Length: 108
Length: 119
Image 1 (tube, rainbow over the protein chains, first blue to last red):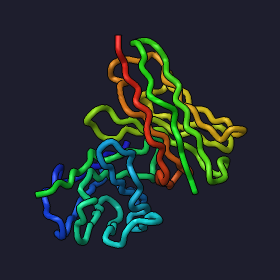
Image 2: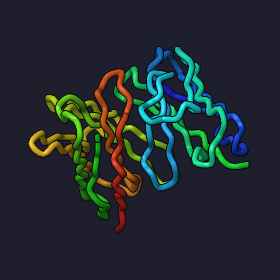
Image 3: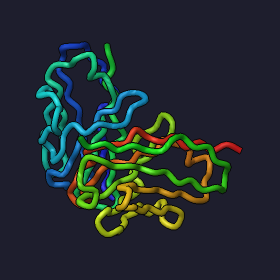
Image 4: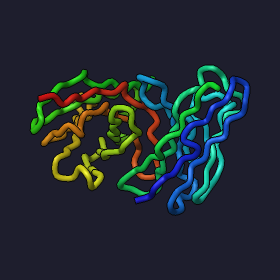
């Protein structure tokens, strides 16, 4: 089973700042990594798939990068609605699909 | 537009079973599968398994094998997840999501179904 480790656990930032979230895989997942955003009481929403492709309707301030074992999600300038929990997920080797433990982006 | 709508909240006693439904619309149901993911209170996301709407093939995570069954009904474009032998550890929100399968991400999610265990 591929283990995904996200860092940091919590990121405290102000609106307008840049956020960089990390996800490291225990073995190579090639480019098959996705990022999801989850707000309280809501279902997760797909942001990025295949490491760097934005899902339809996702604003351009969200970008993904990386391959192999090291990946990043960058939010170029935080909007108030971006404060949420973010999960990475590998979609190359199953079963099982696996998720990281999440990074909470909170208002400083 | 793609929509995935789940059945409502359930309360069960320990040892019972629960069956959650997931109604899909807005796309060709048999071209995709459905993954099920759960989230215990205050915890992260846990993938449970996947079912193909094309042929009914399944992939379950080892943890649930033996007490989990996923099925689809192509006539109603609905997927089902049944979990048996419930314990307090199964209290969670259960999500379904559209998933093509190998190398695919989960692109459209249901709203979630809360399953609560209470004696």
